[in-house]
Image (cartoon, rainbow, N blue to C red; front, side, top):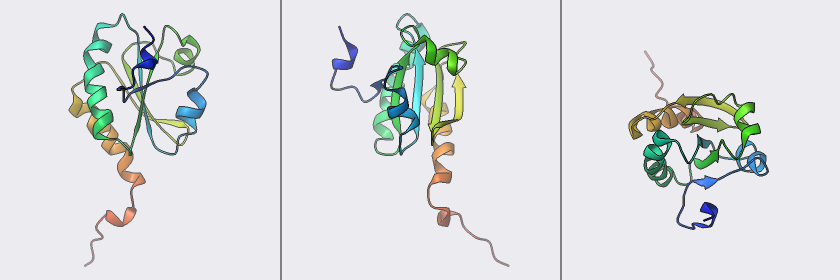
Length: 128
């Protein structure tokens, strides 16, 4: 019954106890999925989030937080609707998205957020 015991999961279940060490102190950006088991749209996007976690393996950490079991975290981050996705970098929220979206919408947000942290030398310089 414990979903944390499923070893094939790429999206790590996080709670109030390990949130700081897993999310805020992470050396890589962290995609956080605030959800609830009873939430239809949350269940609908779960496979998408799982697939994205494999696509961005090593670049972005993916975690999920059950708002029913972690109400203090939900209040701290003003979660009023679920699913809500937040992208954390260096301990702060860099971007958020409320609602269920196709993979392309999440991918666009993630790419936009992690692109600047890549080497700035990849930006072409125009000389005249």
